[in-house]
Length: 238
Length: 81
Image 1 (cartoon, each protein chain N blue to C red):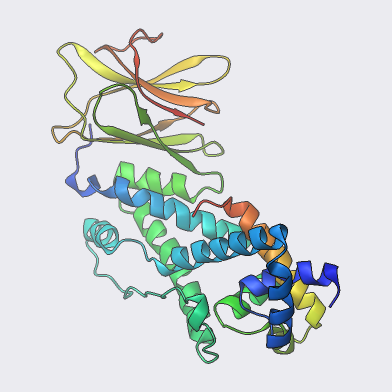
Image 2 (tube, rainbow over the protein chains, first blue to last red):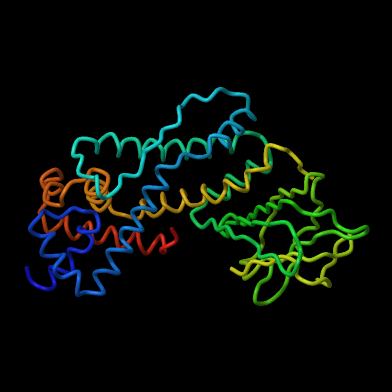
C-alpha cells in the first residue's frame, strides 16, 4: 500500500469499512499523520451528527401538539433508530432495516412539516414553511447587559419571510415596546413593534425584505419609531 | 398578538428541526452512489469491498465515493455537531 493510497483510506477507516489488513496498514500510518487523524475525527463527527439527526424523531410533544391542533389521531408510530456505535457496528444483518427506518424517519419529518403547514395556525404554518426552505437560517439573539428573556429568529431569504420567537420577556415599561430591526450594511430597517403575551412570549412572522447582516431589538416608544433610539437589548449578527 | 400556549416550547424544538433539515439537505447533495456507499458502510457495517460487491461497482470506485461523500457531508454540515 503506497502513501497516497494510505491517505485515501481515512474515510473508509472512519466508517470502519476497511478489512483487517488495510486497517492495520492505515493504523500504522495514522499514528504519524496529522492530516489523517484530523480527517478521521471530522468524518466520525460528521457521521455521528447524521446518525443522531436521523435517529431523533421530531419531538413527540411537538408532533402531538401539532396533530392535536388539527384534531387528528396520529397515524404513524414514532420510529427510533439508535445511532450505531462504531465499536459494535459489525452486525452485518441489520442494515436494510436501519436504512429503511432512517429513510422512513425522513419521510415522517417531511410529513409532520407538511401537516404543520395545514394546521391553520398562522405562526406554526409560516414557521414550518420557513424551515422547509433550502436557505433557512436560525439564530439566537444575544442578550446585552442585564436584560432577561430570549429571542430566536428563523428566516429564509428566498421566501422573504422571517419568524421571531421570544420567551420569558418582561412586560415593557409603560408607554414603551420592544422593536425589532433588520440591519443591513446600508440601513437599519424597522420591522415590528413587539408586544409580549401575558406569558412573556412573542411568536410572530413577518416579511423580511432584505438580506440581514444582523437582527436587533431595542426598547422604543410604544407607537414604534423609524430610527432606533434605544440601546440594543438583543442582537444576532449573521 | 398570538399567545397560544401550544407554542410555548416550539422554540426549544425548532433547533432540532433545523438540524434535521440541514442533514437532509446535506444527504441530498450526495450522488446516489456516494449516499448508498456511505449508508452501507456506516449504517450497514460493511467493508468497502463488500459494498463494491453489493453495488456491483469497482472497489476503487466505492472507496473514492465514500471519501467524496464524507468530504461533502463534512463540508455541508460544517462541523456543527
